[in-house]
Amino acid sequence: MIEIKNISKTFHQKKQSFKALDNISLNVEQGDIVGIIGFSGAGKSTLIRTVNLLEKPDHGQIMINGKDFTKLNSRQLAKERKKIGMIFQHFNLLSSRTVFENIALPLELDHTHKTEIQKKVSELLQIVGLEDKANDYPKSLSGGQKQRVAIARALANDPYILLCDEATSALDPATTQSILQLLRDINQRLGITVLLITHEMEVIKAVCNHVAVIDKGKLTAKGTLSEIISDKENPIIKQFLNSGVMTIPQELNKKLQKEPRDGLFPLVEIELNENVTVEKLLSKIYDDYKIPYKLLKADVEYLGNSNFGKLLLQLQGEDEENQKAIYYFNQNKIQNTVKGYA
Image (tube, rainbow, N blue to C red; front, side):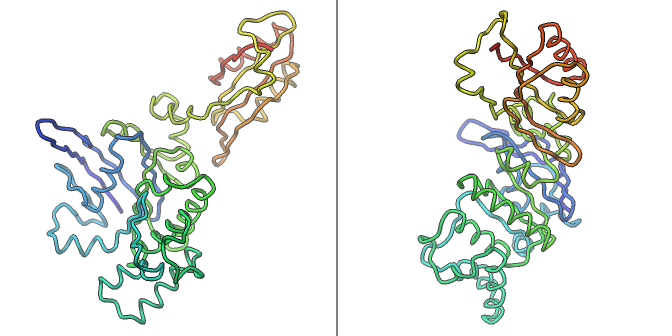
């Protein structure tokens, strides 16, 4: 549906030039939810803004439903943009207009009949769960409610694509989850293709089917969510996945020693991968190697038949037995780190 072909974009400021996008190619299938993740300044916003040509690329093509957007004149482009909704980190609502009137704005600009506007806006208010807020003004809404209004407004012209530019970055975690669930519901109910950018791996894991990783203007990885999370060799992916630190319980941390001593047992942080389940790992330690252990912490997610995440274990066997377990981890490419001894 969307074919981004060899896109490049350079910005010129005074005597300096900055290459925001460097020969990027990416395909997005109809009805998919694709996330583009990268750190600040990676080129994410520039990339998503080239899709509807808010930023015109220096080179390359933007093909949507077989049509090359880079070849369209201004009138043709304006017509096509009506079918591409866009939501932003900052909601850009008009404070002087009610919720109903904000959502109705694109329809009014398109000279839609008042009866049709009434019907359409009422439907959208129901979709985003704001039926009781129709006559309220933005100043009385929470951040999540404002973003729901912005989403409803983006859906007013029945788009086939929804572009999300850091749409949840200004929201708290609970509100973020509700907005992501709304986006998934919209994708499934209306069949709208969603392309979103973010710097948060939790957003990607919550809603995306496919992922592209961008760094310094280059696309460094792309694939299914499971494939991307499995790619521990990519330094950018590794940074995102390791951003969550597994802390040692405070009481245990006070007693923690850096070097092994008699009577102390190793604390091992284990990073799971798709090749070994939590159940298999713990069974191997206790049933096969007969090593008693204490599971101190677990942060595990399941994607399809695979699990990802981290465990913090204290191996409580004899030193030789504990070393057998660590040898097993290393032989099976299960990343592990001894955090200390207690």
